[in-house]
Image (tube, rainbow, N blue to C red; front, side, top):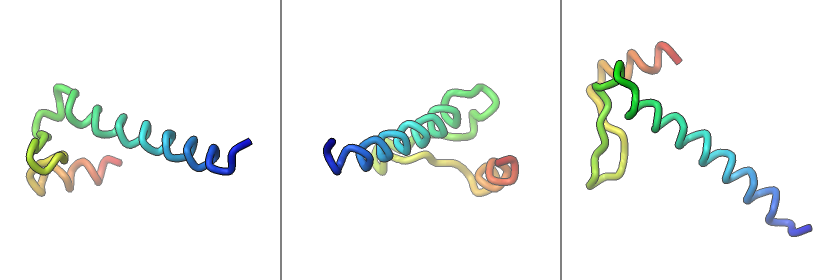
Length: 57
């Protein structure tokens, strides 16, 4: 067994988890206040929206 295999599997698991969070933010109808910044390649929103999202999580 490769020594790197557990690290790769862990990285893939983390990537899938993070992708699911971003996908939920951008795809839900009730979360239309989130957007995607093509230039910066990240999720954008007003501070009020982030604070609300964080308090629910």
